[in-house]
Image 1 (tube, one colour):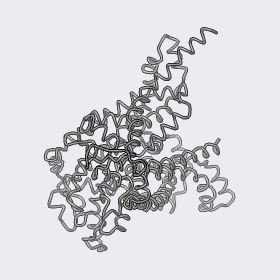
Image 2 (image 1 turned 90 degrees about the vertical axis):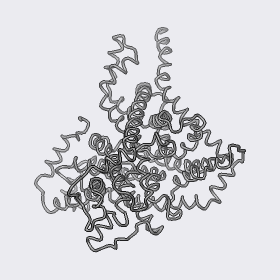
Image 3 (image 1 turned 30 degrees about the vertical axis):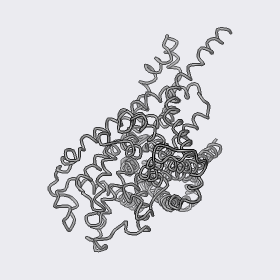
Image 4 (image 1 turned 135 degrees about the vertical axis):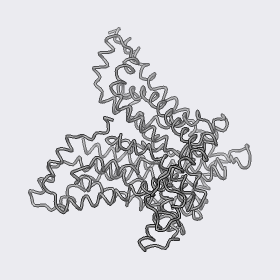
Length: 301
Length: 293
């Protein structure tokens, strides 16, 4: 017995020793900066003014949440970009996943090809599309002109409204493949026997879609949408390349707005406060996501 | 690579199931998929052909969709005039180093969680929450700290940041692979007098190598694709491809297409490779934010 106790004791340091390198690094490079950032958000540190700063309490937060029209506008812009993007990504992703699940030949290769946009960086996606949208030499205007549909000088970023449409189009192109992959995995996990039974009972294809596929895919869809929603709150690279927030500040997202405050205006304290407001929002979304996972696991188990 | 194979048995079973009802539905299915392929791959086609066009082809009408005389002139210009070679190398070096460092640091942690349930559920959940953390919240304090430490415009600063930011994701995936690993093999090695660490390095690692390759490839692509940290922290010498590409946007909506498209082709190359190699793991990896740095 004593030997066992000693053995246990001797082994107790092992898990900690194995885990500590990465935990230390996380503490140093992520947690400490986050604490420092919170401290900063309560000061009035501004690089463009000088290195001195003083404690101002919650002033930055009050400004962000109640006075800063540009930031509140960026919250609105982010929502306006997110809503149609999510809806389109879900619908298109579901459609393509259904098609893929019916494809008998070449499914792996077609799936891999369709997945590529989700693997490229938002910056590269936006850059490719900027060249597609080019006013005189872009593919879209040229194709439209060749088919006699478009005036060659059509500017896809001329108005705020049109810019949002263009951003949503690129975002949908970029991330629909992700939704497609998630939903395809979901569809393939539905037992074929259910469809066979429905068919034997005389159900039409659309009936089995409504009463078997959709209900069983509900949680997969919810998880996919949740992940995209959390990612979309971070929308930055796409905006940086496609519109740089313009025209005016009509396509500025929360992340892009905070970037401008921090690295163009150099109002570091205020940017830190803004980033904490964003973290708060994302944290709420993440908790909802975890809570949904738990429900899913409870239902599955 | 072996990990690219989709479970062939299931595919074969499904194929058998559907055989014999090739009718109009079949044709429509493939027409729909063709339309999807055109939409999702069209931009890549445009970028590749554009990068191979001669200068006069940009202005031609009707537009030149496939250049008659493809030339690599824009790639040469990108590599010499715009220091593309340097920035491409930067991206390669920074991504490779971060990938290796993240693996080395994450593996023991993942092992501790998989074997000893270290930290209970709390640690796993905290790692997931860290994974969801917006980069914008981190870059502001990191920028100020790096400024004080003189780490901006340095490879070390970037690699350290990418490595650590990637740990939560790497640990999550590795825990999954380690749980599938039969504990008996390891115990046998330890009875033979191996220490834990040696058992991990010499027995476990060779067997879960394919899983580690998956994590490594996701780490590589995530670092390769990362933009916010790169644009803030890099200077003239340490720019990555992502930062280089944005420098071509200054020409308005009709910028200089040649070098811009060439740099996009080089920038998306790893994504193409990885999409095929990681097919089976794409859902899991992307869901956990594997490609976003």
